[in-house]
Image (cartoon, rainbow, N blue to C red; front, side):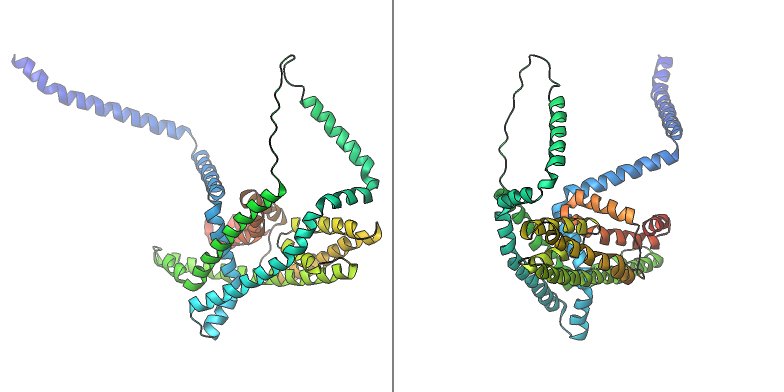
Length: 386
């Protein structure tokens, strides 16, 4: 009985020791398994997953994130004017922000209302315009017919993949009308517009309070100084870039409006506003503008030479501005890799649509500024600016 009680007394501690040894062997096995995967592979895998998570968050949260980003970019654009109102004219931050927003967005609303009438007229004449465009471009009928026949042949080949004798059910989906699409798009645009306006007011009215709060929570003095330098460089360079681009785009809009008026096209304000907005999107915007003015010229003027004049004049204006004047003005601030610019355009357009394409270049420039200031990211900054 004494031996039995002694064994019973020893048994729990032995079981605990065996459990501890087993856990230690499992831990060593886990470490060995982890060491079997190279550290670089794990780092790359974690980086890829993190980037995918960021992209997914930007896409899913675009209804909230996009107005915030637009408001921040507009704050950089309106920063110099806000400084004049507050520092020179001694207006309070809130009053200066409200006055600036009323003036800027009032001008935008007035121009938008003015060009909406001729734009709606062009939309209503779309069916007739397509018939007229087809008639004037009769020389292209033969290649277009060949292309259409080839597409039909490919479609007929891919449509016969079902099993023989098996019936196929075709479900017709009701096509959404243009009016419904425009109504839905207008509601979404107005919602984002008012959200952006409210955020912009608070960003302007708060001044540098948000930046000061961020700097105060940083752990060391070097980190605080680096954050202030990055913020100052972003504010200076991006605001200068946006002001330069805006002024040049305004000149392009005025020159395009005068050129279209000289060509005999109606509603020059509409064409000037279109050129002004399209010029914010590098490469793709001017290409779209050439296509638009080509179609408008074909529909409104005699074919072929007079009809080609609007597109030719717009292309000439863009070459003078985009290839000579603007690069000369911006060369001292920063240069961006054109390959990465076009990739950034497609990437942000995929995530946020047209507004994403408008924000692509400023966001890429901000990334370059941050990468140039942060030591581990300097290679990225060099690639962006090469």
